[in-house]
Length: 250
Image (cartoon, rainbow, N blue to C red):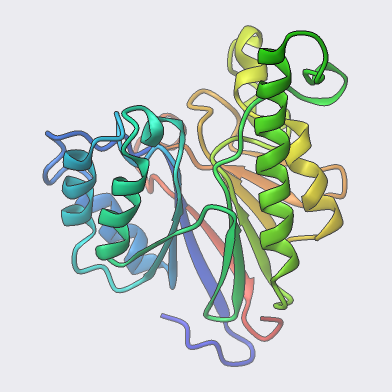
């Protein structure tokens, strides 16, 4: 492991969309152990459980047991499915995971801001807040998530900063998915606070058939670390993304 001294790097292992079920005992631990051994920080970008059930969160907590890396996560849409997202968060927090939802944290000199995010589409095809009340509420959800991200980023004072989301802030990393579902995979509105408060990288999941890497309009890299995508692109592994940041800048 790196020690944060000048000339070394901070290593971040990133994965998303574990979709842990009640029957996942022993299936995720090898991946998580490999990721933790390769990095100083393990980040998980949502859909940690399959149906958002407390039982699934307990299984994942056991799979995470004994990992030595710092663990930071955000929830995804699957973690909200059963209405137990608060309990899921509490179970994972008790297991040593820092779950962010509009908050930020500094880990080994790297600032990390995290939200779930939401959908709405990209660029000129973004859904606008016009028409029926349901449409306006849909867009408001995305705007609220973007405001949460902006607030979290504004509190960071480190020179190295990461943004964790479940939904994508750009179109490039959802390329490969059916065009019809692009609006449900992310929103350009999530990119706006990332432009005002620059970060070193953005990490998300959700797009199982998307592209592993893209860039925001300012050149900042965006990584899609959905586990099904990692497994498809790298059958032999590793099934996570390893990102290195200079510790001296942090």
